Amino acid sequence: MACCINVNAQTARKKQTRATHTTAHTTSQASLQAYRQNFWNNPPQPTGWTNDFDDLFTDEEKSRLDGMISLFQRETTMQICIVTLDTLCTSAKRFDSLALHIANVWGVGMKDKNNGITICISKAYHRVRICNGKGIKQILSDSQTKQILDAHFLPAYKKDQYFQGTWDGVTALIEVLKQG
Picture 1 (spheres, rainbow, N blue to C red):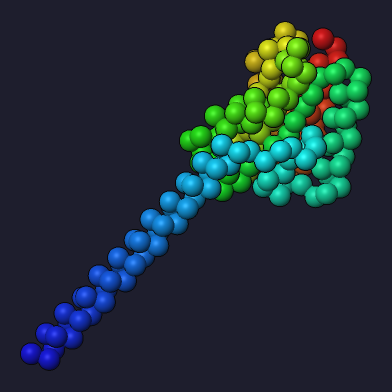
Picture 2 (cartoon, rainbow, N blue to C red; picture 1 turned 60 degrees about the vertical axis):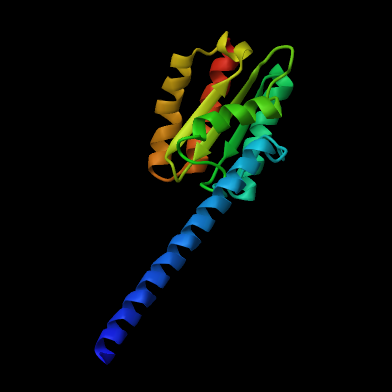
């Protein structure tokens, strides 16, 4: 009989351990969903042209990107905003929606011209989304944007060179926009 009690006690402990892990996982998932929903409802205010929520860039790299974009903005009034998102900010499924949502909430581009570009990057999800305002689409088509993405951003990203890919991609976008 003692052996049966031990077996039952072990089984009970295993069930309790599984239940504890399941509860912790469920609580963790619920907390993550709540955090993501809060990020959606209240995206943080932009801190510059480069908003690195995934810590992909050094401070110097952010400064260089901000400098290039600031100069371009002063010359043209067009605005480019870079946003990196980690897995805490969004799920892979909602990444594209969040990119567009941030572009709209932050109001990238001049309101009367809608001349902004928001570039959202997620290293973990291997995703990049470029959202062009309607004023930009008159100069830069979606197919041109995809060509720039494929030729300038993605090759470096595949080598884990996020700064270089972003620098090259933004430079290519600026060149096309200045010609338009």
